[in-house]
Amino acid sequence: MRVDQRLIAEMIAPRARVLDVGSGDGTLIDYLYRTRSCDARGIEIDMQNVTQSVAHGLPVMHGDADHDLADYPDDTFDYVVLQRTLQAVERPREVLRQMLRIGRHAIVSFPNFGHWRLRLQLLTTGRMPMTPVWNTPWYSTPNIHPCTIRDFLLLCEEEGYVIQQWLAIDEDGARAPWRRSIRLANLFGEQAMFLLKRAGH
Amino acid sequence: MDISASPSIADGPVYTHQTVRLDSGLDLECGVHLAPLEVAYCTYGTLSPARDNAILVCHALTGDQYLAERNPLTGKPGWWSRMVGPGLPIDTDRYFVVCSNVLGGCMGTTGPRSICAETGKAWDSEFPPITMHDIVAAQAKLIDHLGIDRLFAVIGGSMGGMQALTWAADFPDRVFAAMPIATSPFHSAQNIAFNEVSRQAIFADPDWHDGHYRDFGAIPARGLGVARMMAHITYLSEEALSRKFGRRVRHDAATAVPASSSPSLFGEMFEVESYLRHQGSSFVRRFDANSYLTITRAMDYFDLAAEHDGDLANPFRKSQTRFCVVSFSSDWLFPTSQSRLLVRALNRAGANVSFVEIESDRGHDAFLLEEPDFDRTIRGFIAGAAEHAALKAGER
Image (cartoon, rainbow over all chains, first blue to last red; front, side):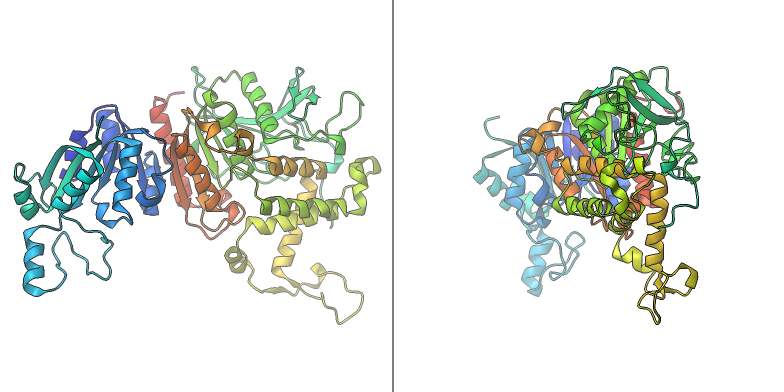
């Protein structure tokens, strides 16, 4: 399991109801079920991953964040997880709204477009940056909605989400030390992870 | 249609099916009380002392209870013998598997060929109209009789999937896991249309005799055969037909239609024609036309949402059943879009649902054929459900 998935798992209370949106090969939900007795389910867009997950006995359905969250009733889950996918969905704001409608908490991780290496590349070469995290050319990247940590904070403020926890992480998923300063995190954090809840809860 | 070659279902019940007779009968949705009720069934494996390892497999329109053993009528292996058996995805070393002939069928369960208690004669075309709920209610009586309170799983493809859904809707506390495969929560206008063509083919047969063909020592073999030929096309895909037959022609004169004048328009026969004729003629040996009409009508009536205020989520609200919905990419009779509709409704109900579309070019019938991803899916879903049901591996 990736280090950032372990960080996500640590945010989730035992026996919680969890929906992992973009569950991949099912590693996280399997972990949550086995070690935390969670009722963990997955939605995954890649059919091979879905088949592999179901073949491992995991409750995973074929679907995607943009189209399949709207069906669930309010408060179906305690946590809805979206790993490294927010930048690739059609309507990120709507996806977040749905996540915090059907779940009491949302856990969102995304690659930070404010990282200094991206800023420097754009400034010096005048071309779309290519880094280990942003590693597909602009014409074929699935990442159609890149954002920075600061952008995301602003959106949370606009939407009235309470940030219960946030951290910057490096590409391997390990926690980065920029916890107190948003400015530093936005400059040096390769990825960010947020634990959100609705205001007034 | 040549039907003289081998023993036919028209010859009467020459085979003894394992049957339970329930004198209390069954109240049908149409208001008729059907008594006695007989349910013919097969079982495989051993029921655990806790009676918690039973899997009910529901057969499709023209299937029967001979799931994993030689079919006494056709002599062929059971229709799902590649899926059900020791060590197979539905593992009879671990599970007690039950399969019963549906109500209205012609393999031992009460149906049009049964004797009506009031008249002392066979029901034939007077058999009351039945629904998927009646079919499932009859199965539930069998499950009661077997002393099983809760089924570990109900699994079925096509019309069997309709039964699996109906079980989950009608008896939510008695179904721990449900696997509706290549199916739909309602019969679409296209599905009904195909069934109607089948039925009209039967009605148009001079041997139909308003459904009382048995009184005339006849069976509407041509009509039923055409019905089967047409239906069989809907079970396949264009790709599957092309791969299997292409445009190849049979030059075997004996099998061609006798021509009155030559050169004839039909002097030779495409292989696909020959195949369909074989499908038609072998079907009429084993299936009763009145059963075909009764069961296709039950399928046509099937619409779970309509019965629940138009919302398909309603019958599954508060359901604790674990669902695994499976569709096949080339199935145009029960397309993936219908499975997705079902999955969405299950999500609206907050149910625990897995959903897989298996990549296959073999059409609706793919669920009966060798599809490794499908096998893995069934095996995995059952294993996952068993883990949740706290069934210990190897427990008997």
